Length: 150
Image 1 (tube, rainbow, N blue to C red):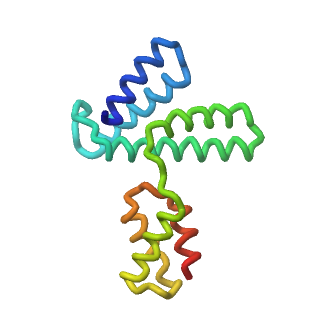
Image 2 (cartoon, rainbow, N blue to C red; image 1 turned 180 degrees about the vertical axis):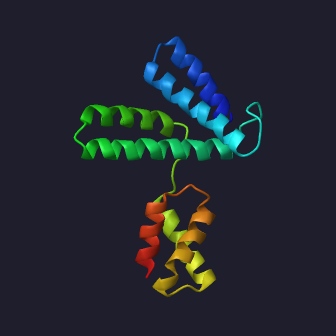
Image 3 (tube, rainbow, N blue to C red; image 1 turned 60 degrees about the vertical axis):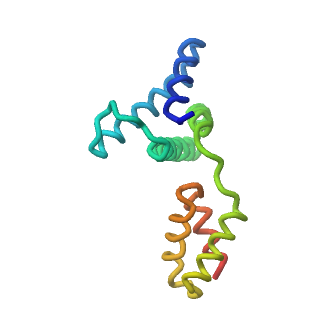
């Protein structure tokens, strides 16, 4: 089942069970899908493909992570907990991220292919690894792994 349809079904379930936090998060995500469609020159009624859905979900998850970090630093545990709950809801729809071992293997292969052995070109290798992992890997982890190769 496509991500969009799954979220729509889960929204109906959340509304029936009166789960306000899940309902609000899923409405926010659906709104993000519509905004992304419009921003890319499509109509809001067009089909939401999984690639677009993943892109929006990752952006929404990043927003929640950033807000969580800010609330933690600001000593607002109550608000941080809300962001943590919302993040957990969003992460249910994201694919499992790649393991560090998988990323390291890809990075080493690309390093050999591209013959990049100088740390001054690590940015090029990082970009290539990010492209190859197709968004299944965190940029922070990729950067750390690439730096370890030099």
